[in-house]
Length: 281
Image (cartoon, rainbow, N blue to C red; front, side, top):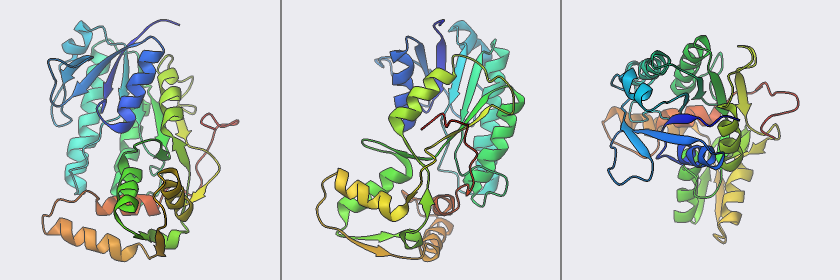
């Protein structure tokens, strides 16, 4: 196995940092593409913002021959700004990587990205997937990412159950999801970058366990794992919560949870296609 120099966006986030660690564990060199590089950072960092063009010469001079694109700007809430910043910014990054000499690229998408997705997140991730596939990249669709000190929607859930003795569970707790352990995801992504996909048909990988868990089971496991004691779970419909968040966004309020995240959580791919045997089992 040849050693790679892999550029990782979102390397300061939850999933991105674990992927970067897994890459180094396999002997690869990691270059972090970040908004605010630090002089004393333990890894090489390059300034990168999805709203701006990255000069291919920067990647070429560093010998980058692998790319894992994890970053997504969640501050954007309208379809126009999400597409302009995230989709278009991703396309610019893909093309800068290829112009620098390329190598194996991986776009970290979501299990909520599929034809017919209802959330803006899923729809625009799906559009970005198509661009990645046209350029010969892997597309990885993680399920609900679980693990120690989780981020994303699971991180929001954990903060909620830590704070509240009475915990609302959306969708009456019956919504079923396909989870994935963050450690498993990071391990497999660090291996995928070592070779390009054999075909476009094989390039989309669902990074989740086929065995599903209900939202009620997921919340209860968070409570048990973190030894939070007794919590009263109250099943609720998700629509009023979505409406409250959407109203707050319309008023310009900045929240830790977006209304579109509720749509995404409640409307993930009902029939994801797993490899046989499942890669991320």
